[in-house]
Figure 1: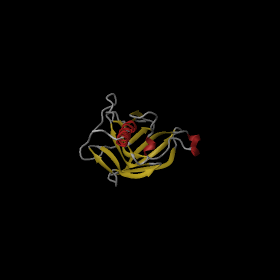
Figure 2: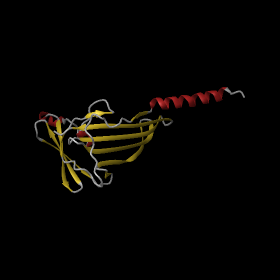
Figure 3: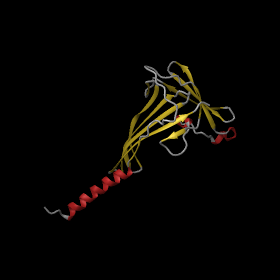
Figure 4: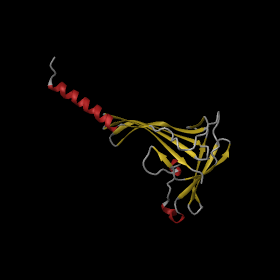
Length: 195
């Protein structure tokens, strides 16, 4: 059986799309670092996350710096508060049985105006073996020539030395230019020491 030139071209295009799909996909799933303090587990409820933590993290699975304040959409430096320095610490303070108030402190020890709150039994948050999990609903949409689905989960844990660990899981399945499929599955570990 002899292939026509048009069939060979179609097969070549399909092969090229598959190669491009693999080249643009990313899977990064590092395990919890063995040299970090062990994570604590608690049955049936969340651990107590109350405490003051450093804003800057030790990171695995991501190049660059990560800040605890970013989890709550608070930048580490505020253009209007530059005289106070950057945010150096973040306090988790239990406000009632299921909620934590999150406060941010500048290097001069003054408190930032930003205040966040986490509800351990909220619409997108729950407890799992002592971890507080915030699992946002999947988002589907289009942007800059891409169409796809994105999911994100943030898991808070405590460690044996009182540090806070965040495991951020990001997954996306996107069609670039609406026809080149790409898949990304990434886990980032962040360790925030007591301040």
